[in-house]
Image 1 (cartoon, helix red, strand yellow):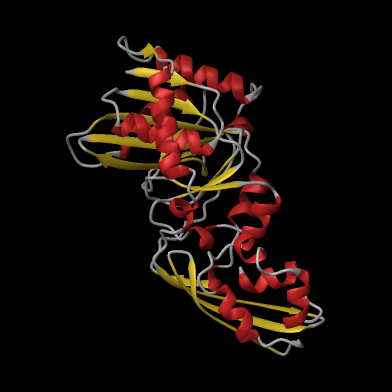
Image 2: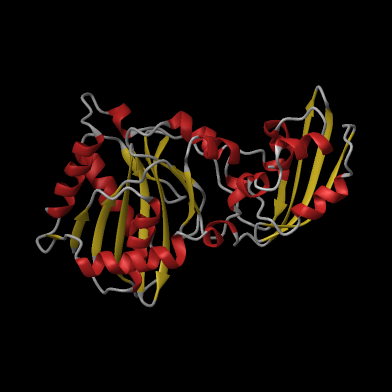
Length: 324
């Protein structure tokens, strides 16, 4: 098996890299990689229902959809991701790929073990979650490995009021999580730990060998990135039909927003409450229909002056509490 570890940290590149080796090559490969701060949602999820949109926007956290199922996860440079890509001729088998990672962690003196949900735990805390997809006789199995991740940012980025959303999309399961570094007496830095993992897997089997990305690889990855992962439609417009309901109460009054959405696009909206304004809400509602249900899309047409005319005394931040 080829063993690859690289220093590209853009989520769009890394997700495209996985898909490239799955669909455009026949190589059996193990990849170690890290992402800049990002939320990576599962293939079947409603993206907006998985994130705190104002928090991820204000913190510059990238949001992106992957090609495997499962729940939303938070990545940062303290989180090491790993990917196995190889031939597949049988049923889905998570244990086949989780066991090598468990073995490496146990070799470091850690009480690592799998659970029935295809997660890896140390003690009773989750340190790794995994997902898979199969295409044309090949399987991609990837997972996170929380090493020194900012768990506070993790909880904020994924925090969401589930009562706001109703629909058929899969929602994430919240788990108790911990960092691997917390269980090591003298934890090395994340880069050194990633190098140790790389060395362990490189020497795990006699046929394993180092792999470096070629120009052809980089060109293929760039093409996939441009056609999928750089597009908002991929991340936000695959959520099916669902409803959203939010409300806010502030000194200027109360507001309730009820939206009907299709693949992340506003199809109908009702704005009610005891607020004051000189412009009717129906005019604003008409302007919002057809927009993506994202703060940056709505903000483009909703200036502070426009907010004041419809919702006198409201700020943009207060309005967001109801709309998103």
